[in-house]
Amino acid sequence: MILELDCGNSFIKWRVMPRAGGGSAIAGGVVDNSEELIAALADRFSEQLSDCRLVSVRADEETRLLSGALSARFSMRCRVAESAPMLAGVRNGYEDYKRLGLDRWLALVGAYSLTHGACLVVDLGTAITSDFVDANGQHLGGFICPGMPLMRSQLLTHTRRIRYDSVAAEHARDSLVPGHSTAEAVERGCSLMLRGFVNTQLELARQQCGADVVVFLTGGDAAMAAEWVPAARVVPDLVFIGLAIACPLTGE
Ligand SMILES: Nc1ncnc2c1ncn2[C@@H]1O[C@H](COP(=O)(O)OP(=O)(O)O)[C@@H](O)[C@H]1O
Ligand SMILES: CC(C)(COP(=O)(O)O)[C@@H](O)C(=O)NCCC(=O)O
Ligand SMILES: [K+]
Image (cartoon, rainbow, N blue to C red):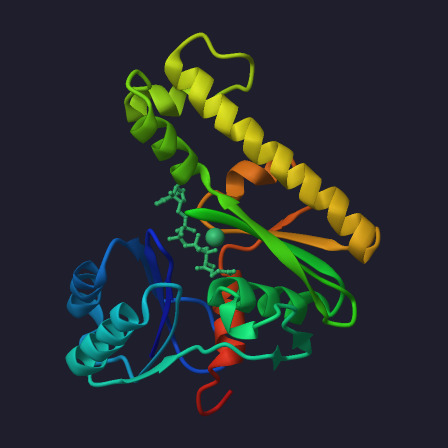
């Protein structure tokens, strides 16, 4: 069995796949840190994992420690995805290709592998990122802005009176009419910022890549954005699709 990991700034997404080259996931989850990950895996998979592949946007040292701990605990090989100027028909558009976040790169490669045509990828996690690729696989660049968790926490950190609990936040998200409480005002305000961003990306994508551009949404807050872009494809495992392309194992 193969362990796949997507280590974002907030969470580690993991899944266990039956073998190289496909099938559906046997198990998966979201954890905060490597200790939780090892605990989640140790119960069910302690003898069965042969390989691991992972992508990380965390510090190199943290990524090294994680892959070392996993290889040691489960006696498996661990491959870590690296930057590349070109992969599977996609050409990295950054001035310095190594600077493009690896999660962005792999999601883009994953999206292009599904369409072989122009795409826009919006990844809504700690940060929200967008990336454009044209029909020839040329990455046209992208944008980075704060995601929902960062928008909320900036308001909380830098004001004295913006305070509300998670239950109020949950209720506030039921609608987008002007808020009548702090929770509604903040949650709906941030949602509208997000909606404005996503709609602008869509317009830009049509200008840059043509009307046929396929829009992909991924990341923890993708479902929110899906409401506003009915034509978009919500693909939660887009980074994993790219990861399998970047780190093929024997038999793939
Ligand atoms: N079940 C969930 N667990 C954790 N976060 C979730 C969940 N559903 C939605 N989210 C949202 O997704 C965000 C994290 O998205 P994610 O793509 O995992 O971020 P990152 O890749 O930066 O770690 C959270 O801050 C939260 O807003
Ligand atoms: C933009 C990001 C912080 C997004 O990370 P995430 O929200 O997925 O945790 C990450 O892709 C990153 O660290 N990128 C490097 C900078 C860049 O892409 O230009
Ligand atoms: K992201």
